[in-house]
Length: 248
Ligand SMILES: [Zn+2]
Ligand SMILES: [Zn+2]
Image 1 (cartoon, rainbow, N blue to C red):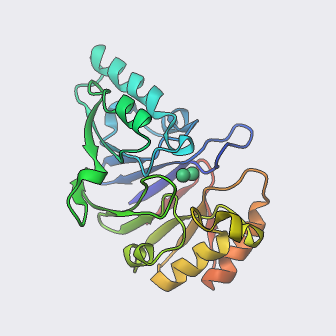
Image 2: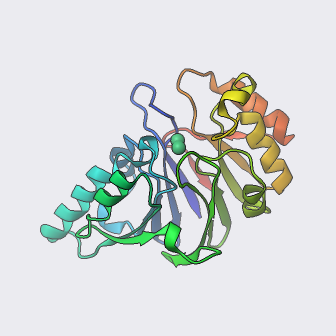
């Protein structure tokens, strides 16, 4: 299993950067997780669009979503011009309604799967991997995602600290967790996001083997986020950066 970071910034990128997007590859299958602004051009540095097997959207905030609109055109064009002969499964939650209702019409590019409508415990086999979605604590319908192939990868999506995420992440080989702020932001973030220290503490409680933090505010010094996450985790923590790859 291989993770490639396509974008790591929120809610807007640094110069030449991209917002949330991750490519997970396993046995020749490719899953794209989140499509923030700047993600499609970075995806194309690593693979051809016709080899994409599934797209999973943790939630529909712009920093996780915007490139779905250009990805749709890339897939439709490839199908129309004979470079591709399939629609790509797209898993997404329902809100906000205006974005959801627009995206659900992109049926020439995607087969639409609504995560909110999946029966509990929201499990599916996607591109040969066992996938499980757990609701996050966020100001929109949002999900944390576990993807199990030869190894198990867990992505927090956007969420505040909660027991359900500890449960989902327990024993993960690699935990990719949002770290939206420093200690000083704890109160501001508490309903919707994790600080770097909380990401570390959550990873420690879940006993994950490896922690990578992401979803960085572009004005922050990343080594400070890393330091606070390491204090919470009690072990080394890695940083997600565009183009970085992690073998599981
Ligand atoms: Zn969000
Ligand atoms: Zn976000």
